[in-house]
Every structure is written in C-alpha cells, then in structure tokens.
Length: 323
Image 1: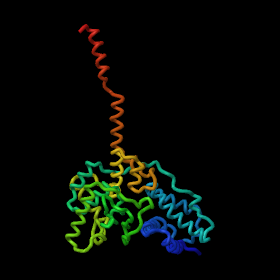
Image 2 (image 1 turned 90 degrees about the vertical axis):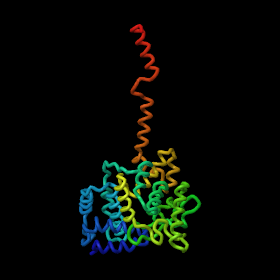
Image 3 (image 1 turned 30 degrees about the horizontal axis):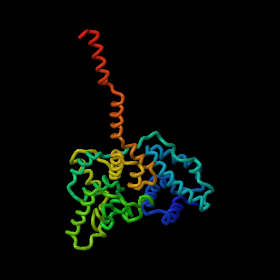
Image 4 (image 1 turned 180 degrees about the horizontal axis):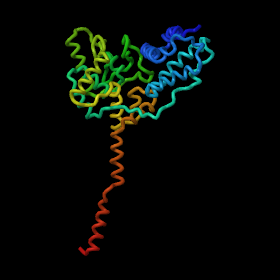
C-alpha cells in the first residue's frame, strides 16, 4: 500500500532542496488545508480519476478566485508528478483532467492617488511607518523587499534591492522573487533624505554601527501584522479607504503611468519579469486615464455648439428677423 499522507511527507522532504523556504511554507499551507484532508489515509493506487474530479468540484464550490484555484491545482499536480516519477502511479490523473476553467472575473486592484496617499500619511505619527509606506508608494517596492532593507542597502540616491524576507514563519532573508527583481531603485531627494534622517535617529539611540540594522525596525524587521494594524488605524483616523501593503506598489505603478512614463521604464523599475505584468496592474487602476479620455472626447466631439456654429446661428437669426 502507498498511503497518501506518507507519500506527502516524502514529497516534502524532496522539495526542501528545490524551493525557497517561503515557497515551501506556502505550498505546505495550501496542501494541508485543501488537499490532504480529502485523501490523507487512502491508498493512492486505489484512487480513480473521478476522485480527483470530485476534488476539483469541491474546490470550485468554495468560490475562490480562478488564480487561487490554479495555485492549488499546480500544488497538487507537482505532488502527483513526484508520485509518477517515483513509479508509485503510472501517470498523473490530474494533468489529464486539466486546469480549472477560467471564470469571467475581473480582478480589481485598489490604489491611492497622490492626494489620497497624502491624506493617508497624515494618519501616521511614527516616522518609521511614515517612511515605510512612503517607500512603497514612491519607490514601488514589494513589502517583502522593503522589510528586508538594511542601511547598507541605502546608497547615493538609490536603494539596492538584493534580498527579500519571509512574511511568515522564521522570517529568514532570501533572494528576491525573481532574477529581474534584483535591481537598484532611484529615490527622489526628499525620500532619500528622509531615510537618511531615519538612520541618524538610530545612531542617536545606539552608538554601534547601524549599517547592518534594518531600515524599518532596527535589530529586527517590522512585523507585517503590526504594519497592517498601524495602516488600518491611520485609515480610520483620517477616514480613507484601506488598501493592502502590496497595493501601495500598484499605486506607484499607476502614479508613474499617469505621469507619462513608458511601460518598459516602469517595468524595469519595479522588477517585473515582463512588461505585460506591469500593464496588467495598470489596466485595473486607470481611472485617471479614463477621465482624460472622457475629457478629450468631449473636446473633440462637443455636445454644445462651437463658436463658429453659434456665429452662423446668429447671422441666420438676423436675416430672418431683420435685426
């Protein structure tokens, strides 16, 4: 017999050498919650294709976004590929069934305009958090990149993005999300100077060399949950919608698009693998551009008579009524 959960343990052992710690943690969470409970004590060789279709139907009934359904599909498929490679099963039945069908869903990203961000920032009273959110908004960093920054990464007018940090678990430092995520991000003068001033605050409180301290937290980085609590409190204080930490990055992308920067420049700045990813973020956050389109079309196709047309009406009126 080949019991499902016993094979799963062997699979995890092999994946330790293939995945980053954060990716492995995420995969374990998804597997333990949405796959293992349905199959754990069963002999994998006794499972039929219908059993895997039933699993897909159950997952579909939860109403998750299609992207998350397919994350679960990939997680399960990787495990079944492992079983096939180990010759426990002949082939992967889930691959034959195929991925989850795409639903007609529109993924909307909430963002802040510059005006909204300025309102939000007034709700914060701690300089560390002010500079953290300023870096996300004006620098476009991923939260995991910003939390991993040390003062040694702060250089002449830019930050050196060369690592990221796990948002859960042991919070170990690792490499950024992708190769293209390793980059240097230029900062505006105010943000750069504000981060330098934050460095001087640490120096006053601690006589040791601060270059190895985390910019946001000191000896240990800020906790994501603590950041979220501060964010929500700030939003409640000033009465503004609350967006996620990652959506400050989306706001940065939208801000640059609306300022006229080209997509390839923005894509390189934020460390996207390809320009399509950048454009996808923007197309869900382009209300300002829609206003510009609306105003442009109204100018080109006016609803009221033009000046020349008004003059012609006036002349006709005079000729008819001899005035």
